[in-house]
Length: 313
Image 1 (tube, rainbow, N blue to C red):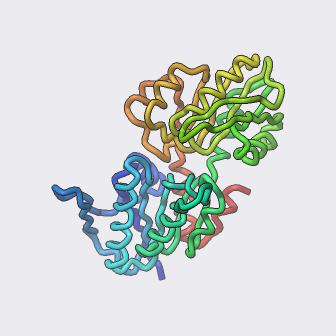
Image 2 (cartoon, one colour):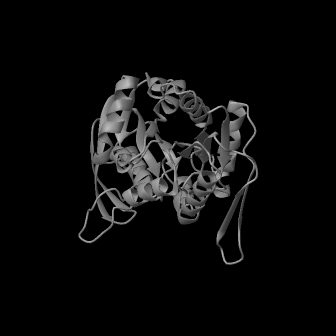
Image 3 (cartoon, rainbow, N blue to C red):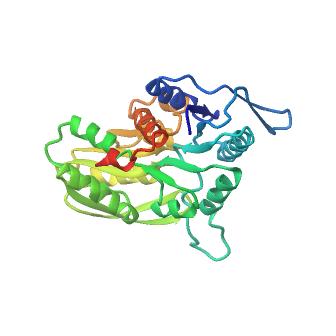
């Protein structure tokens, strides 16, 4: 029997792990994670976990390769310490955009990451808002897939918009935007764009009536913020009253913060699946919502062998 819940954390997103543990009302697992002078990662579990139900929280954000290797080593250490079950809690799943072959002779890296996590010894995975839902099928172990939509929708409702339209910033996100529009009883818009290269996009056309209306753009992540800021500018030119963007994962790499500061966005709302770097903390246009309570509830339900999907009923 799994008679004790243990939660450990890697170094990628310690603030989120601390917040999750406050909801769980248990102390964080005693673990040492450090680097040798050549960069190799050292991990040691400093408490007895034999026969325990263990969760390890590690967001695979920048630097992604370091975070991934750290997660794999922690899982291996937990397995060799005779944990009964190991759940990898991954708030942000790296390489998720490489989920299929879009050109000849390229890898499907999202599948490779799944294989590595499984091979390391994880028994199940807990994550939120994967870039592509089919990534769950890359694993040969159970995957519990959470959604940040209830959190984001509650925040949108708190704004008391009068004439709301939900807009997808690209054709690939239409299903996600439609689900939000349905729950908010709002109409749906789509931005038709052509991608000119990696992290470069050009807005082509706006499908839907946005003039004089409050616009909410929905996406799963914001990386360099090129798509969002270009889209916000196009929406303003079409007469939008205000433009909000809601994204679960705030990658915000490269020039993202500067672009957001200089953009026509009224506000960018993200969650804390990825720690916000210092420049972002000083940006008045960025609002961060916490997914800690959601992860804490999911961890409790998994530990007690209860339904996780019922969280979203």
